[in-house]
Amino acid sequence: MSRAALITGGAQGVGAAIAARLLAEGFQVVITDVNEGRLAQETAALSKLGRVEAMVGDLRDDATPRRAVQFCADKFGSLDVLVNAAGDVSRASIEDASLDTYYRLFDINVKAPLFLMQEAAKIMKMQKSGTIINVASMIAQGGPPNLAIYGATKAALVQLTKHAAHVWAWEGIRAFCINLGWAFTEGEQRTQTKVHQMPENWGELIGAQTPAGRLILPSDIADLAAYLISPSARMMNGTVIDFEQLPAGVFRTHPILKS
Ligand SMILES: NC(=O)c1ccc[n+]([C@@H]2O[C@H](COP(=O)([O-])OP(=O)(O)OC[C@H]3O[C@@H](n4cnc5c(N)ncnc54)[C@H](O)[C@@H]3O)[C@@H](O)[C@H]2O)c1
Image (tube, rainbow, N blue to C red):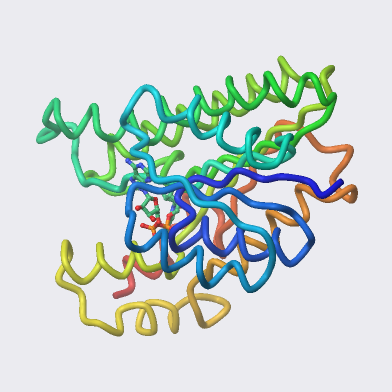
């Protein structure tokens, strides 16, 4: 029987790239997202690769995690992989964070992955197998002032991943966290051009200053996700991967400070 994956934030960026990779590897995939139009577009594109089902849902809504897991179980009869890729990147510092932004960030980046893991684990425990991949951020370890609350949410996600890996290890479930570095995605393009007024080609300009000469691409993250899900990673669990071209805390040659 084909294995099934549930991917949040699947309408674009990292989530969509992981969906494409898993479909190419023979998975059946549910992508879920709040952006209905983009989700429909991406579903049409991905359906050329395999069986993909879409569920529109806002992760701020308490009911969405259970609904998404149930949707996957109803469509495919199993749940082998959960990828929490959806994320909110609202800017807020310790000094200017509003309650609204605080709740928005924590609802989408922490509450939703927590309850998605909780619901998914019920099925994975029965199956005695499953892989969870949470997409956190290098900012979980520190960063600019305006990413204080975002960083706190991603640090919380790192911690929850480790607890998940511990608690469910004997049930055949492995959990991983990707501390993603600066990646060129649709969401990041919007943030950099609309929020930070960077030029349209900011990605090329910043990428040129990195060791690889380019920013991370969604397909790079899909490569890592495919490895973590594969039998090659069978002896790893609870691993938090810093997925960036420079180690955390290295500032002198960091592209942000050079620009
Ligand atoms: N791009 C980067 O540089 C970068 C760096 C570190 C971490 N990350 C993390 O990677 C993940 C993916 O980011 P991306 O760059 O692909 O972003 P993106 O904006 O391109 O994609 C994120 C998707 O999540 C969806 N989403 C947002 N809020 C939602 C909600 N309330 N309910 C349901 N879906 C919702 C969006 O509609 C979007 O399709 C996020 O968790 C982000 O925090 C990104």
